Length: 265
Image (cartoon, rainbow, N blue to C red; front, top):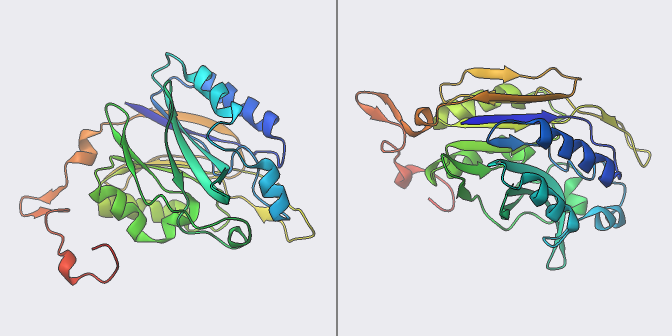
C-alpha cells in the first residue's frame, strides 16, 4: 500500500483556510493512507480556553462531512489532528476517516506543556483499526516520549503508527527510528512547519522533518525542516507482521510482561 504525509503550516484560527489546504492535499494524493499534523485545523498556540472552545469541533461538525465527500470512492484513509469538544470536555484529538466517514477518534493521552491548561487528558486509550490491507493505530505528538504508546499499539496489532505532530523539540524524528525498530512497525509522522507567537508568549518554532520509517528502523523519507511537502511511498505491510528478529527470537512472543512495571501489563 502507499502511505504518506502532508507537512504544512496551518494558520492559527483560520479553519477554512487550513481545511482548503488539506482538501487540496487529499485531491493530489494518490496513495491509501495520508497523515496530517496535530491540530491541523485550528493551529496550536492557544492564548485562552475560550479560543479552544471557539475552534473545537464535535463529531457532527460539517467539516467532517466535507472531508467525507472529498474521500468518497477514493479508497483513501486520512488521519487528521483537531481540537475536539465532547461531553463537556476539550481534547487534543485525531480522527481516522474514510469514504464511510469517521472510523474512529483518538484523544491524546500525554499532554505537552500548555496543552495541560486547555485540554483534558485523553480517555480513549490506544486503539487499532483495520482499514483493509493494514491495521493502523494513532498516537499524537508527545505520545512518542512514552514507549508504552507505540508498544501498546503494536501488541494490539497495529502495522502502522499514524503520528500527527506539532513538534518543537528536536529529538522525535530520530526517536521514532527506535520506536519502529523496537516494535517492528511502520510509522508516519506528520509534523507542521512555521512559527506561532501569540498572547505575549515566546514563539514556538516547529521543526518539520515529517517522515516515514520502516520496521527495520530505516528512514524511507524525511522532509525538510521548513518546507511544505506532500509525500507518499509504497510499503510492504508484511514487513510489519514478521516479528522474528532471528531464528530464535520473536519480538512479541519473547515478551515477559510478568516482570514489567506498569499498569495494564
